[in-house]
Amino acid sequence: MNRREAISRVALIMGGTIISAEYFLSGCKPAPVKVTELFDKQHIKFLDEVGDTILPATKTPGAKDVHIGSFMALMVRDCYNPENQQIFVNGVTQLNDGCKQKYNRDFLGCSLAQRTEFLTLLDKEQKEYTHNKKEEQPHHYFRMMKELTLLGYFTSEQGCTLALRYLPVPGKYDGSMPYKKGDKAWATA
Image 1: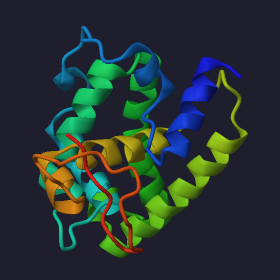
Image 2: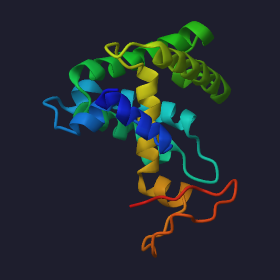
Image 3: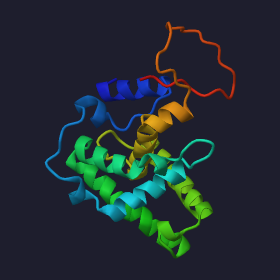
Image 4: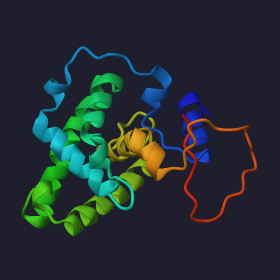
């Protein structure tokens, strides 16, 4: 087992998401490109809508409410290598083109039901791709989008304090805290 595989397994065991082995192995490094060179305002609006389809507002704010598009753009610029940046940027176009093929309208013009259906199909596609891909093959663009949505949402102030149980000043550590099915997970700061 190599280091990348071990990190992936640990993340799965802990129930977390992993935005990419590249992020965990090398950390965030400032990139020489500006966010605006990779994404314009329309791209960020598009990513907000993709994120909000993945995590819509319910009793808690949705991904759009935490400005997930700006978060994704920043993370792609600062934390992804040029190859993964290109995959992500091309993925925005691929996602939109896929919607046009299936529904004869772009993603932003689709109804919420159509968006959800399309992203569900993309999620199945990326799971199959990820399961069968070789180590040297690139990541699937939708997996990147979904992982960044989850990371950005649950590390935002609103996601951490409203969607998860949060204690700003926790007491002692209790490794066997009682849990009832349906309880929110705990956030840590």
